[in-house]
Image 1 (cartoon, one colour):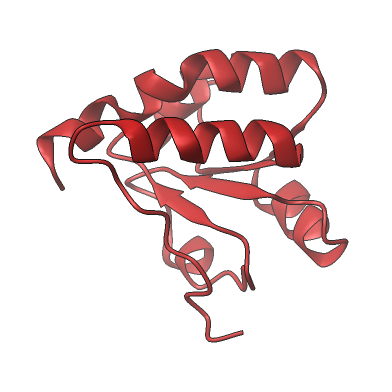
Image 2 (cartoon, one colour):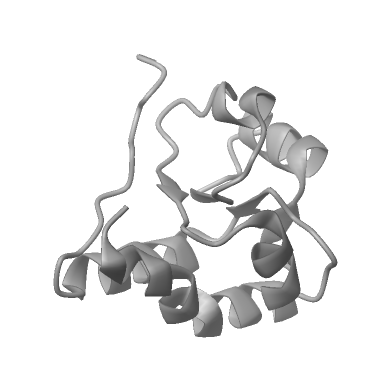
Length: 117
């Protein structure tokens, strides 16, 4: 992973805090899966040490950012002990996050439609 990607989560912290306060996060596998099935997820963030089942999750067209942060660090950013995956349910916040990432030097592209669907 690129060196700049280590700071990707830190770069997105203000957006994560805003999403948390506005109730625009799906936290954990079950909540993310439910949000995806209802078409409510606009962006997924995956911890570096997420398990195989999460890596195989059917995401459809929802962009996915794999972070350099592990699940303890991702969880700490939003006030949990551990978190392997989260979904951003606000399209506006997700668009802002993706734009912020793309604007960074050596920007990271989200994996889109990785399941062929």
